Image (cartoon, rainbow, N blue to C red; front, top):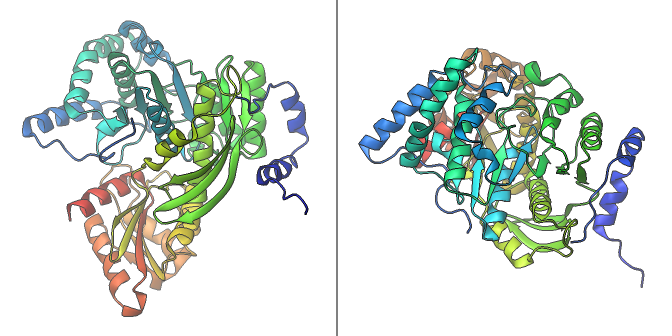
Length: 496
């Protein structure tokens, strides 16, 4: 009887057929070979129930909103470094895992956090943007910090923020102040490890005042091209700034030019590299009720019978990246041999949640929320929805930000949307509904596009379209295009 091929060996064989230039780069880089409480509650809380606390939180939000927004940047870490200095370098009080990439950062961060928590480490997680509440951005022990603690943290660092504002050419931005709050809150907790997602890019991102022992690079694609570059390679050059001397780099599958940049940077700083499809990866996956069943190859061996309550092949690959990152953090493949405890890994993944990422918030008809906001994310979302739900008729609700590639996003969804309801969220960054509708008509045709400027009315229209004919009993609604659109829809639907 012939021996069955190892599925992981097949992945490796497939991955070796790559640009020969990579072999030269990899020759100078060490590679990592395998030797080697859980988040609870609603991860996207609503407003505080106490009117006084809500008033105080709104006051903080208003003060933060008076600063440069997240889309106005001056590429420098001088201001955040100055803030860290006067705060006593709180970001150096704990080890950290730093995550950059184009898509999948927040979901990967949540998986890393769940794994670390399951191994009884106290975690701090900093992610952006938020879905419903600004407090989501700073999490302790797997849950957003309480509004009272958020307010207290802001008030604690406010005098130091004002001191730095006076000394710098530009005031600290909204994102820089929040980053300072996160690092201070983690030191105050204190946490055993911080899981930090970049806001944009890497080198000059405000988060990049940490020296993370593990740098995670999720898949790189085109987004924020006006600020980061017009090719994956150019974007990777900026994101590679999170790779620090002697660190371990967990590298998801990348376009060739992006991989070249990352591997060159690893050589320069003597970082150890573990690559998806080579040192770790996804061995197999099967669609299951409420998610998917996975077998992952980690740095320390194979982990089977892993249930992940998230949909899509992209989330399975995110799980492989997250597992490798946590193994690297624990020294698997370097200081220690053997795998992590498989039952603990299973327990952690089974408890993962990622609000607004193919999240079901209503049945009859089924309404799914997904924060895809660029073409790559939309393609992954469309593939996952088709695989996991098998809707007989799917209605889209799309509200996007003005600076995004909305044509590419809509083209990715066109094959799966029977009709699309074009709308607009409340953000000043939202694309004008008529402008977005004009692009949608070019792609879908006039008879498949409905325009509802108000999001609540757009949701009602989409649900009505999904319900209107009995033969479409398996119809559904997908709300997408922006994290803000998804967050506002989540609040509306969960109140209903």
